[in-house]
Length: 256
Image (cartoon, rainbow, N blue to C red; front, side):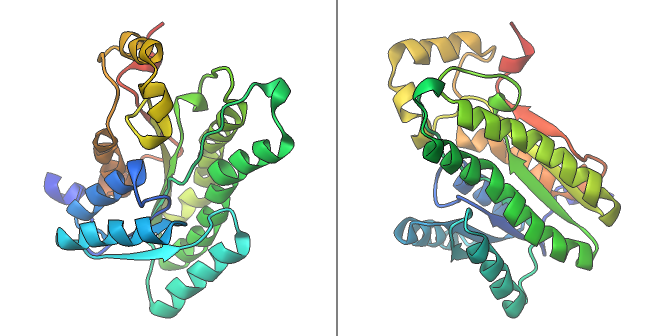
């Protein structure tokens, strides 16, 4: 197989959750540039429509499905619509996520559950529905989005840390059960990335200096830094990669 073909996603359809902006939008655009047809997802209809327009104006094949990734009935209904429309999801990127910062001793159970359900349970729900169809069709690609906190913890983000640690082992569980069906389930672990979710951290001068000093590359990552990893894990190039989490963190986890 020639090298360009290893990364060719022509003829494939990718569903990317939480893709009306930020990391999800960047990865969606990267998958489209590699040839994939896109299905964007989000809850904000206006943002979703704007994202679709932007990518369509760039010449990409793109549609949208607005549903709550934590709502099992909404997830199963969305996949039923895909089935009715004859839309086969070949690539799933479980990107939807939220952050919530509060010390553990002050943390309400409702906030714990909200973060866990959005960042972890949604990946199970959507992964399950996608895998059922992938198994029937003979294979597919699942990419879950982890974090540095899939490996290490920071104060005040315990539910996020628990969820992203769960993503790491959920990914391995998916590989353990579905590899025999030619499904590759892997994850991407972003480092500190310039996104709206991190706005408060970016604007904090001391934290900004800490990130730049702690990261060997000396900078924050950008959403586009995740594109190469996403295309690799979505493409034939990663046919023998399974249950792996690929950290895109500027080297932060590699050093003390």
